[in-house]
Image 1 (cartoon, rainbow over the protein chains, first blue to last red):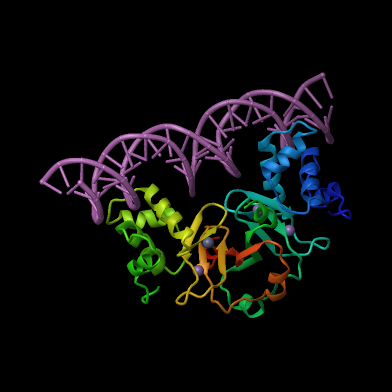
Image 2 (cartoon, each protein chain N blue to C red):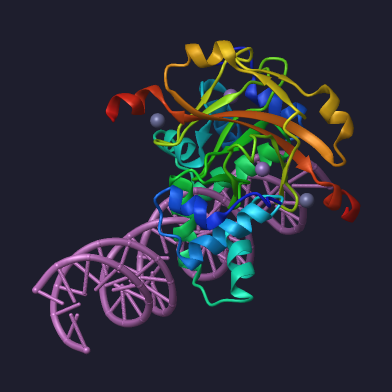
Length: 143
Length: 143
DNA sequence: CATCAGATGTAAATCAGTTGCACAACAAAT
DNA sequence: ATTTGTTGTGCAACTGATTTACATCTGATG
Ligand SMILES: [Mn+2]
Ligand SMILES: [Mn+2]
Ligand SMILES: [Zn+2]
Ligand SMILES: [Zn+2]
């Protein structure tokens, strides 16, 4: 999806050692057009390189902590997409409750006004997420 | 929270046998001002009555399927609140990523415009959820 | 080369939630 | 009242995603 990103460079500039596994995980997430599960990522890497599931989990945790990627939970498992940045504007997501897949939606598809809210809320707000739930196109056909 | 709801009646009118366990679970959810986990509900009931965790899970599943309650996942576990209805208008929720607690927010706090989107989307949309993530007031104090 | 921190592999544990099966409760039919 | 059937509940074992503990490897650096 993103041909503007140098994943090794992103890792370096975040202060992270750009190990092969880290670059691979980040690259797979960055080039995919919808958030992927740890299992998806493991399978993708394992097709061409030897890697352990636990390493994938550890890399995902690290990248999440440094806010390079963004975790979404569909009720079964986490899926990861690139965190918002210049190249990746924030956008809503669609969650299929049948197959569990998560789709990125167009940033303009749903507009939100949060202005007055952010000022009143007593805690610390890190993120505002808009999730649309339902049955995806593909699952609609099957049923 | 809700003193307008007759939980036994709600169950009956949904076509569900209003067993003691079902009424208790639904009542606890309805009277609480924020979504509760299965464990929360189990503990509450178990203080005064004998019940099994599995029964709680089964009741929660049944009530969710009949859309009397609404599940939210904070990444660790599901929490359940009353599903939107006359007495309970839909509203955004705040998710504390430190303690996992979920708070109901004021319905007007965040406004959303979804009109054009719903027409274009190829799948079936059941629900639009707005989730605000961050650190809750209480966890802010502790840290 | 020797050393050492950080990254990875492996097996076992954890934790929320589910499943299979036996038993209890309740109502309708005999 | 006894039988039957249907539905709800308890209990124990299981599952699947993720985490942990600990051993081993790797790649700098002196
Ligand atoms: Mn996305
Ligand atoms: Mn709520
Ligand atoms: Zn689907
Ligand atoms: Zn909190």
